[in-house]
Length: 187
Image (cartoon, rainbow, N blue to C red; front, side):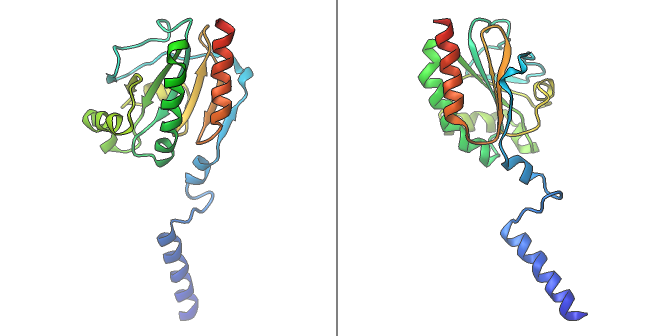
């Protein structure tokens, strides 16, 4: 019995130390798997709601952005997967902002320390983010989109419809091609 208890203790310590994920117990396994929703959903995008602060912009609404292609990027600065996507989002913004792309980062905190406006501002500076960022401390925009993951990207066409949705890292080329296709369609 003592040997069995010792083996179980060692296994639990090993899982704790290595940070192993046990499916069904830890939802990090689900977050690591990219999720893509079919572009054919064509659902009208919800507006930004419950925003406590806007950074790099005056308050925006999707009605004001009609005629533009909009990438809504749900993220939080404490999420390593989100931080990994930021260079791709900022590159996409730099590449297409003069052709009609608007990127709106929706910073929705997971932890209490991520609710601080000064911490968000410092993260924007640290990551070189110059596109508009909405601080969604009460998760109202997150809930309006029925979002479940950090990071998550939604591409909205010129008529206000969601034409692409992706959660997690990756699919950067597909996101780029989707934005380029939408922008060329309006050129």
